[in-house]
Each structure stands twice: as structure tokens, then as C-alpha cells.
Amino acid sequence: MVTETLLEEELHRLAGSVPDPELPVLTLDELGVLRGVDVVAPGKVTVRLTPTYTGCPAIEAMSVDIERVLHDHGIPEVSVVTVLSPAWSTNDISAEGRRKLAEFGIAPPRPHNATAPAGGPVPLTLSVRCPHCGSTDTELLSRFSSTACKALRRCVTCREPFDHFKEL
Amino acid sequence: MTAALALGDDALVLSHRLGEWAGHAPVLEEEVALANIALDLLGQARVLLSLVGDEDELAYLREERAFRNVQLVEQPNGDFAHTIARQLYFSTYQRLLYEQLATGESPFAGLAAKAVKEVAYHQDHAERWTLRLGDGTAESHERMQRGVVALWRFTGELFQPVEGVEIDWRSLNSGWLESVTAVLQQATLTVPAGPQFGAWTAGAGRQGIHTEPFGRMIAEMQHLHRSHPGASW
Image (cartoon, rainbow over the protein chains, first blue to last red):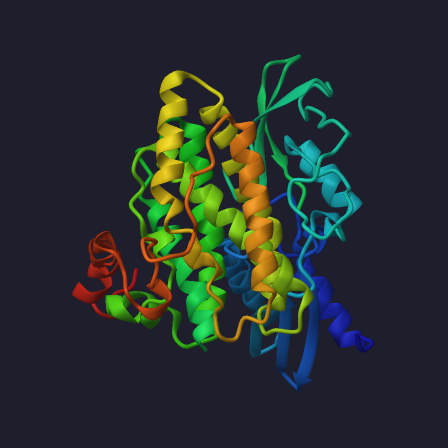
């Protein structure tokens, strides 16, 4: 990647501080979906964004929010493009992002070997910790939950159901 | 782009079929799971069809004979076991296909590398249900077996080489057979007898020939767009 100029760095910081529309506790930067900001001409900026899931509908809301923030910063022409490669992985979520997810009541994804050829539901030995009571005695209810990126679990100790940001 | 159309139509049509479960799934978790899988497939379809042209025009304004999906994905949902059998056959195929495409130089490599991780969850979902239903009660076993047998004749078409998809089709077929056989056996189900290919088997979807239920499916899928051209909200 080419080195970012000072202006690009600043715009990257602004775009990266936009909250995720589905998980407003996280910023796009913490989620790891902002791939870069390029100033292509004076007043003209291209933002590269990668979706968590190919069909993630939040990408459109993210684009609108980024455009708004950069317009407010005096950039008249902003285009947000979607890039698929390299594929996003839950390993791209920052440590701060993980901490915020747990605080919000969503068990963060466990680190995993994202270069495994198949990806997806890799058998993991680390247990998922209940974000409410901290117990590691939790069980899977469904691999699919309120959004594509989450699984539904239940804590055996405190009996509360909770979302788990599943590994991808 | 015959290839993008074929792969995109597979994803689009199966996505629509799975969407039909909304409001009808046996439990709430399945309602959500099937809709999640449908959404993943729709996302893949949008990327693939956009390589060919305008995604909305392609989805909503093509006639039946212009669709290039395999006949397997257009088959009606049937009961839950029937849908799971279709999911098992298709997700296993799609995962192996994307795995191969992800490592190649094709225009699909980026999408395949991303989507294979999503499809791995679809396959996991289908396999778990196949095991639960096949190795469950007498009733669930019988229904799962019925679904597996009914859809078998549509599986041969999955391995007809598609122009522009540069992969090893023979190893795709053998890998698929090995994986599906292992799951069915573990689920105490009988692997259907008979070849996947031959005069009695179905499959000319890639040439635009579709089964009768497909016409009704796209009529429902397209009627709103065709009745109100250019509508938005």
C-alpha cells in the first residue's frame, strides 16, 4: 500500500470514527472494515470499505454515514467502494473493539487461524465466556442469530441468552 | 459472462426459496437461520450478477429461459427435511467449488475466498440437521430419507462443467460424493442408488430449461418489480 498523506490520515481517522450502524458501540476502525482513504484529486476522495459478510445490508448505511462525515469536513466529492479481497476476518476486530463488544453484552469472537483453507466453523477449544456473569459454562443455541455475524448462545450458570460474534 | 450468470443465478434462486420459509419454519431459531443463509446467498448473487450487468434488471426482468441456475436450487421447499436435503447437496457443492475458485486467478477468486467462509456455516447447518433428523425418530428418519432420495437425480447437473469456471470438475464431484456419503451414513440414512448422470436424471438448468415450479417461483419474485417499474421507498 502507498503511504498515506497527512490529509488522508486525517480523513481515515474521521471515517474510521463512524459508528457501526448495527453495533453502535464499535467504530468502523475497531471493526476493521475500513481499508483505506485515497485523495484522488483536490476535494475528491475514495474510501475503500470491506463487508463483514458479502450480503451485509449495513454496508449501505456505513457508506452514507462516511459520505456525510467527510462532506461535513469539506470534501465535496466522496465515493465509497466495496472491496472483497482480502476477505474480512473476525481477527480484524481490534482489542478495544473486543472489549467494547463484551461490555455491550456480546461475546467477542475468539482469535482463530484465519488462513485455514476452509474458514468458517472451525472447531475451537476455547470456551465462549458469558458477557453477563463471566461464566465459561455456555452452550450454543443456534449458529445464526439477529444478524449474519452473530450466533445465539445461552449461559448455563446465569441462564441468560446472549449473542456471540461468531468467528469468520 | 456465462459463468457469473450460472453461479449468480444458483445463489439468487436458492436465496429466494429459503426466503419462502419466513413465517413457516418449525422453530424461531430456524426461521432466523434460514433467513441468514438466504441473505448470504443474496449477497453473493448481487456481486456475481453485477459482473454481468444491472443486478435488478437481471433478477427481475429476465424470462424463465434466460436463467442459468441448476434445477436443484429451484425445487420447492417441501417439508423441512426436504429443504435440509437440498441444503446439504448444494452447500457441499458450493463450498468445494468456492474453495477451488478461491485459490485460482479467476475473476471470482475474491468473492469465493470471502463466500467460502459463509458457506462453511451453511454446510455445517445442513450437516447437523441431517444427522439430527436421520438419526432421530422413525418419522424424522423417514422424511429425511425421502428428501435425500427425491433430490438425488438433480445432483448430477452440479458437476457439468460451466464455461469460464476453470476448476477440476472431476475432483469436485468425487469430493462431493465422499463428503455427502459420510454424512448420510453417519445419519443412518441410505445413500441413494443409481448414477448421478444418465438418461433418467434431471438437469438442463444451465441451458435455460427449468422445471415447472420455477415459473411460479419467478412469477412471485418478479411481479412487484414488473407491476411497479422504477418504484422506490
